[in-house]
Image 1 (tube, helix red, strand yellow):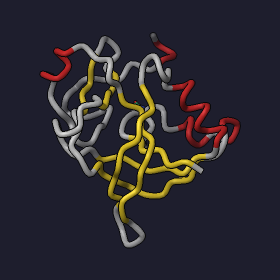
Image 2 (cartoon, helix red, strand yellow; image 1 turned 60 degrees about the vertical axis):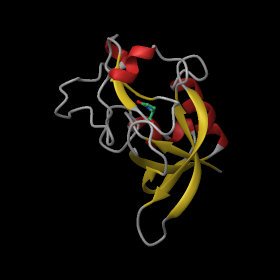
Image 3 (cartoon, helix red, strand yellow; image 1 turned 120 degrees about the horizontal axis):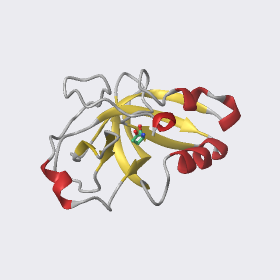
Image 4 (tube, helix red, strand yellow; image 1 turned 180 degrees about the vertical axis):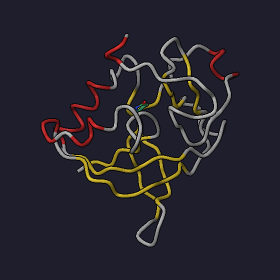
Length: 144
Ligand code: PCA
C-alpha cells in the first residue's frame, strides 16, 4: 500500500473524487484529512482552471487535503489519470494527519515542477474548493 495526498479535484466533494471510489480502478481507503508540513504554492491556472501544487516547498501555504492508502492498481490508474509525468509529477511530501490516530506521514502527491514562472504570482490557496469564492470553475475533462 502507498499513501497518496490529494489536495485538488480528487478530494471528497470535488469534481474527480468518484474515480477514487471506483473499484474498477483498484482500492483507495481514506486515512484522514491532512495538511502539508511545509508550505507549497497551490494555484488555479490555465484555461481549464486546474489546481496545481507547485514543486517549490517553502513558498505559499500549508495545504489541506486527504490521505488515501491505495493499492498498486489504483496508483497506476492515478498516474495515468493525472497525466504523470507530463502534466503532474508524482513526488513525495510529508503531511500531518488530523485526529487522534494522526501523526506525520510520507505521501505521494501530484505536483508540478514544469510550470510557467508567472503562475507563482497567482493567489496561493490553502484548501482547494472548485466552487470557492475565487469563481474559477473547474472545467471537467469531459467538456474540454
Ligand atoms: N487532482 C490531484 C492533483 C490536482 C488535481 O486536481 C489531486 O486532487 O490531488
